[in-house]
Image (cartoon, rainbow, N blue to C red; front, side, top):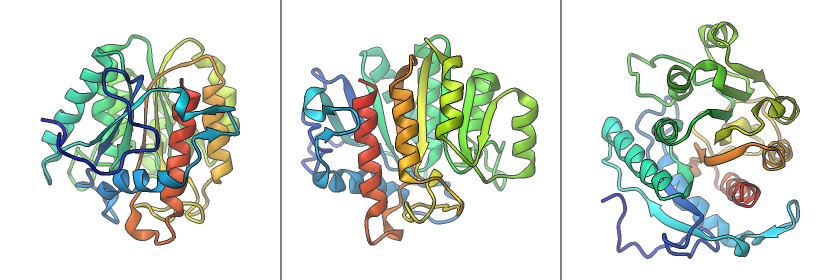
Length: 289
């Protein structure tokens, strides 16, 4: 069982369709077992749902409303606490089921390691897959403190699975020297510090391709998103992230799934991080229709 079938708590705004009706399936991946600084991102999915109550269904950016699409909120996965390996297996199994059933997964983390099993499932389901990665951190380590299953490793794992030339990272401003050396020598595409403009320049290269998008909320400057486990000063604004998401939505790539990760509500009593996150999710749901 992936979910608590008796759960009757809050769902993301308008995500009230049945699984069978849904185009998008939104699901929480409440895991923060390998966070290297501040824990608590496992509470992100539920808090984002709660914050969505204040969100308009209508997007003035896209002139479209959430009531126009069918979304199912499956709730948070029942992941075995402390067992990263088994949790990853479960996420991959569920993502594979979604792809098999023709659904578009909309994942909410949780730490960034949760992206890795969804990418693995996408790789099995789709040909010509690329990953767009928007983040403050390179996440290109082979291990962290001897642990290969870490929120510092998912993009390196994706490079090794898909080939580094199929990974496109934006907004990066933190990592080990070795990570940047790997990015420079491997053939992957990395743009440092900014997201929107370099992404717009890169999107024509991805025309017609299947793309999985992963967004780490810490790509934003902590002034805009203090509620995250590993904040990094010098980040982009909320407006720039919206611009980047809309650029993807207006391009000729086929987004086959996406996630937003690393919201840790305990560090943001103002809730601005969760409020921003649910808006980004709305724009992705509407933009990738």
